[in-house]
Length: 489
Image 1 (spheres, rainbow, N blue to C red):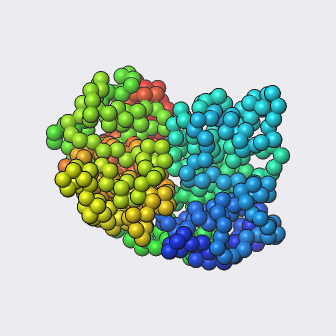
Image 2 (spheres, rainbow, N blue to C red):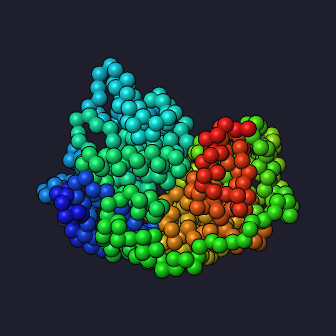
Image 3 (cartoon, one colour):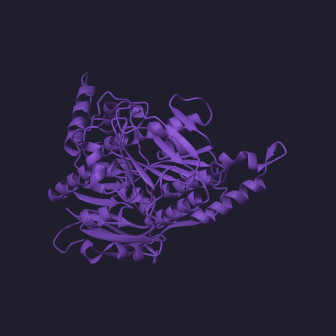
């Protein structure tokens, strides 16, 4: 908190346990009015748990919370909202079977009368227009029909809508994880404008560049405690990574050679995009890492799903020559089985190898889960715990373990690094390269330019067509952006 800004939030000695797991071990944190606090740490450090307590959706075992110098009694989500606290959690809270306007009405019960749909629709569209110009979302759109990036945009915009309650503090937990670079820039620009108007933010992101560039102060959490808290100017990326507990700042960065020449190994995938007015088909060979880039919602996910389907049935325009696994980006809708354990979620793509006779061997399932828990560092004391006991980033690690632990020779990745910390990302990058060197093929849709640099070749999509095919040597952020916005040739 800066010396000149009056205090808005103070958390003292916050502790929280989930059974034998200590999520928070006595956290102290303060936030001033009109201040943007960046909160960083590895998956499982306690960031989201602390924010749930501040939002009233979880109760601390010990400690005190004060808002505006007062300690509220009977703190709850409703009271937090009344006091001006809004939260956009990493796991989205929209009702998928309702429209955008109807989800806004749930958030604002004061919208009543015959024309409540029109009022709710206007309220959310005005805020979407302010934050994400050119968003392309309609008030009558069903949420379940929106791609995850647009769902994230609705969730963010809804948090800023106002009727009879103020907005004093907005908690953004990985708000750009499903957004492409252009849309993320729109949100971050809006955030800074609102900070200047006196609204406070707690901004959680594993994209450390976003935190350093947009926050006034940064607090680092590790193992349920705050281990550093200072002005953003006091940090750089290396200091943040070191404070988070990963001291191998440079050692694990990918510095590979010139990239592979095309066609030196057997063909694994040939896929024709929805529109054929671009530069041609997507082609992937054995042992290649192929990146899919461009603005979100321009056909990347659709082509990945077509390739996934082609592994089991005929799909027009798609040729697949080996078994396929998918790492979903929207883990809640397409990834985890919420009623199953961690071990069951990891083993579901390896059932043939886990069988003993006609039944699944619990011993083999446990061994596979334990192997990948240690290999990819899934933070859990017991692989038999429910998958939802994991933090969001650790759930994503379990989806990686499911795909890489299977015998699939082609791995499709639909922007899978959402909410994964920087240390784990580097470990996964190394693992992907090792698997590619052993002959596995990866098709990797990502909204992060740094991840595209891990790929041998990158296809840029626009309006359902491939508009550029870039080798690793040709790849720059400027070329990707230029291709994303230029008319397809």
